Amino acid sequence: MNNRTTAAPYDALRRRTSEKWQAYPDDVLPMFVAEMDFPLAPPIRQALARAIELGDTGYVELGDRGVARAFAGYASEAWGWSPDPPRIRTTTDVSVVIVESLRRLVRPGEGVVITPPVYPPFFELLPEAGARVVEVPLTDDGGVFALDLAGIDSALRDGARGILLCHPHNPLGLIHPPEQLVELSRIVARHDGFVLSDEIHAPLTHSGATFTPYLSVSDEARQHGIAAESGSKAFNLAGLKCAMFVTAGDPMTALIDSLPAEVSVRTGLFGAIATRIGFTEGRGWLTETVAAIEDNLEVLRGELARRLPAVRMGRPEAGYLAWLDLSRLGWGEDPAGFALEKARVALVRGLDFGDPGAGFARMNIGCAPETIVEAVARLAAHAQTAQTAQDG
Image (cartoon, rainbow, N blue to C red; front, side, top):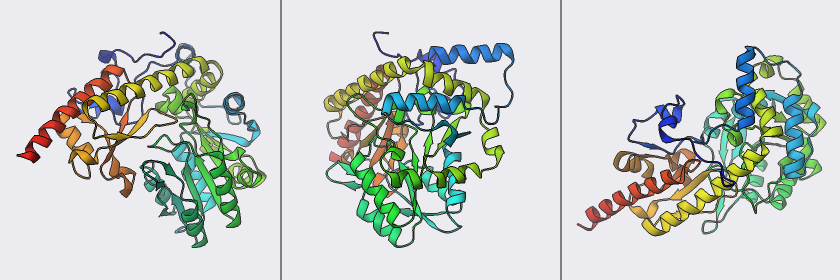
């Protein structure tokens, strides 16, 4: 593989039954939902095949620490952070970590801060848990995004109970710097609040970037923080259902320990198997996959510069999602709708990430580089058509 993970053949991908490959007709390039086109890591594939051969398709063992130990070992090696396995609980997915945590952290109607443009389900998960959405958009200094710490401080002072942090930040691939996280932890502590940190994309941190887990930045963070962790993005396991509540201080550990046993029992056994194997035996595959994603970023940059120089894109530090500013193409506030209708390329509409997403779209580049080349060519052809129509 030349030290790179390669995408599965396109005809094989078309036989997949997941949303990515069933939502649109065959003439549409599906580059929307966050699911990679790469084959499973061989150790995971082998472990799942063994489970099927054994008929090992029952319930997870309540209290099994295999996933927790595997993740703790990975976090220690990758990030220099050693979470304590007894402080880790599994459940189905990161959304459940968020909702079940919030149900114990807020009373109905209390505000929780989110930072648009941000992962669209955040706007829905808060109301599901009974919380009220309080938007404090990221600051944007000419395409350089950051947490608005003063705005978060003000929101907490005005009554918001805590913050749902996206770290690394989806859709930007932004890793919040440790000094900002330390300051955030002090702000939150002053207001007796909490931080619920969604760190699902962290294992896909790019070379040259450094991810700092929120729970590692200060004593305050350890006392008021809960991290939502998973191998589902890193190893492409979303359908297998396994994620983790991770805590580092007694108050939040007690809160998670108060959850009904059913929250953990609903963890998918295949998800637990795949997550454990991924974090212990799949690290080489993960390194190759991140390298392939970085190569794809360069392909996308080159194709945009050559065919669509009006499109601007930041430099993600993690993940396989590209946040594209298409506002100068004249496609309106929802360029993803134009791209789907005219170019037959399915992107995620920027407005789904909040009002700052007007004119933007998110592209999934966890695919073959040829798919990226074809997508940009299609977009460019219709950009020229749209420009000719405007000129006429």
